[in-house]
Length: 130
Image (cartoon, rainbow, N blue to C red; front, side):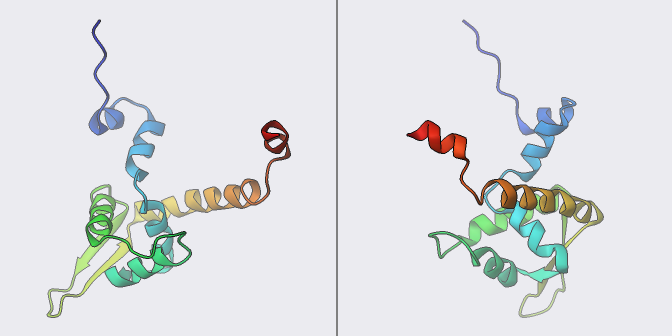
C-alpha cells in the first residue's frame, strides 16, 4: 500500500490553507513569547533571553543555539527584523516588522483566552476524571 507523502512547510504555505501556514510560521517553543516581548520596542539578544527565562517552569537555561534558531526563523518569516550595528563588541537589536506588529493582537487574544479558560479547572473534566 502506498502512503501519501507528508506535506512539507512549503506545501503548507502554498496549499491555500492559512491555518497550516500560520501553524508552521509560529511553531517552536519560544516564537510567540519573543514576538510578545518585542511589542514594547527593540531588544538585544540578552534581553530577549532574560525575558524568556522570566516565568518559565522548571528550566533555568535556554540553549543559545535554540534561541538563535527561533530568532532566525522569525526574521525569515518577516515577523521581526535584525539590525546589526557593525560595532565591536557586537550590537544587534531585534524589532517587530509591520507584519509582526499586526500579529500582536492575535497573541493578546490567545493570552486572554488562556487567562479565561486555563486559570480555572473545568468542572466537566474534573467529573470525568473521577
